[in-house]
Length: 167
Image (cartoon, rainbow, N blue to C red):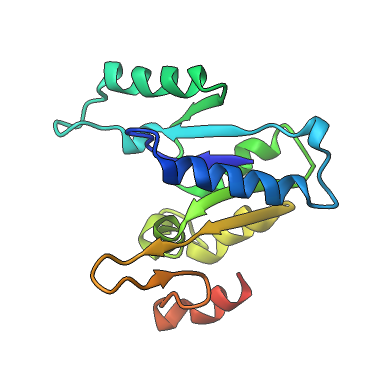
């Protein structure tokens, strides 16, 4: 189970997302709690300071804080989720899970991230869901309306609507 974030700082939402997804994942029939690894992943692509440089001190402080909370921290340079899942797939054939917020789901369905792939978003989704992957989606509250965005009411581009239905 992996939870991606900037963790700047670690928030109640981060921890609630972690606790809820952990509970759901560990109750899956295919999951052995004794063999489960939980990883808080920080990607370097989200850590760039205004000048395009990595702020090493800020980055290390966040990793150390998560470790002090008893969490395993993994630092990657994978902006795309399919690359993270491919990496995990090198080490396990067991069920994997990602805990993500609605804003991250919107990014997953944004075709601009897949322009470098000859198969585009379809290739990325093939790589993402090739393995036994479960995604736990945490809702997002829209400040202006008070409405919660979930997988049920999220609006996606018409061109990928059918792909989203599959998801």
